[in-house]
Length: 189
Image (tube, rainbow, N blue to C red; front, side, top):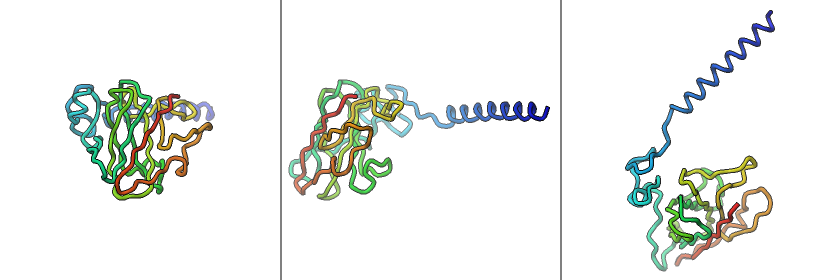
């Protein structure tokens, strides 16, 4: 009788905790974006976001391209004409870590190639990481083994055969005072 009571107690407790956790996750914070809205979960939608019916904010925008300035003039290729292109700028410290990015830019994927510029704080070594968010949900879709299901790439376009992140030495490049041009050819999974 004691064993039966204990089993029922733990089963009931587990079910109650599951529903409490599920309802908290579902209703605690609404991070969804209703297409066409002028305001998203992170603030006011930018003009570019409204024009393209995407969740894009002012802080997502690329910098103006200026010749001979300390910036990275970037060309992203192998895109389809939908969703968002996300580009992140990293320094050597905290490369490929979520909190390590120096800058994040999101632009509409409105053609098979997208050009954008990123100002850098000073000449030095940097790396770029990019992916094509085809459905525009601001998240990289991944398979069960964590391999991306959406097109992705890094600066210098290294060939990475195994399931690992690119290394700093493979992706880094030097940005001189007058800036540099970088091409990222996205890999389709």
